[in-house]
Image (cartoon, rainbow, N blue to C red; front, side):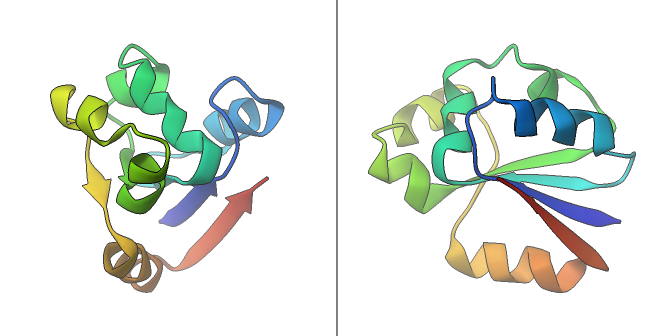
Length: 96
């Protein structure tokens, strides 16, 4: 199991690359600009069952997207949860 950490917007080249790299059982953590994925609940990352997706709460709040994530019932995690995710996975890859 790998933790993939995406920092860029959902329509960026790294976002497309991470989608291709994800395997069943992996986890995708959206941080920084990647949390704008909350604006589009129809994105592939939300509609597929193969891997888990989380949004970093602090980055959602900083961008005024906290209520949108709640409205769409998207999974969020705070900084302590971020640390826990890194501890739960054998490896992590950050996509810039």
